[in-house]
Every structure is written in C-alpha cells, then in structure tokens.
Image (cartoon, rainbow, N blue to C red; front, side):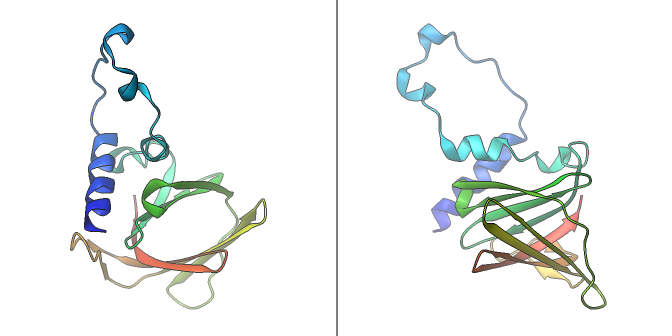
Length: 152
C-alpha cells in the first residue's frame, strides 16, 4: 500500500515538473507510448502550485486509498479516487453550512452521489505529516473517505 502511495506522490510531483522534449516517435519503444490511465487521470489535476491559476478554490487529499478532490471556483468538483484509477467530474452546487465551522457540498451526476463536508479543524496527513487547516469527509455513493484540505 505504501508503494502505491509513493507512486501516487511521485506521479503528482511529476505533474508539476516542466515538460521535457520527447524523443522522436521512431525512437520511442511501443511500450513507452502506451497510455497509462493513472498518469492520464493525474494529468487532469492541476499541480499544487498552479491550482489557483487553474480555477481551483479548495483542494482536499486523503490516503488509504489515495484520493484528491478539487472544488473549482465556478463550475465543477473534480474527484480522483483509488490512487488515480477513477476520475469523476460533478457540477458545483451552492454550499450549505450545516453547523458552525462546516461547509457542505452535495451534488450528483449520472447516478453517482457526492457529499463533501469541510470542517475548520486542524488535520495532519497520515502519510506525509503535513498540517492542514481543515478536515475533509467525502461520501461517494455509499463509501466514506476522510482526509485533510485547504484553500489554494
């Protein structure tokens, strides 16, 4: 499991690296040109240092299994689940405030339901030890995931 998280971390880091020139197609072995669905999904998430410029307002992250959620300023919520194996886009709905210090988004698309609850409470990532100002709970269909998050 740690190997999968390390792989996800390395892939996220790779997403934030500047692009390098690829070798000419004739020089690239066929195995290297095959599409990797996890890398393709990760490429759909803006790197941490470019998330605000891409329109992301809030980012949550969690482990076991690894996930990332981006709440965009204008139009959508993008959820990457299971170490990058599942990428889902939901319409952004108006938040509700069920209790003081909590923000909730409830949305659905194509029969999939998503509820995100953000609480202003300190949180520490279980893998990296990084501190965040908020806890995040995601309920996707009947599955509950917990993690941390912050405004970007």
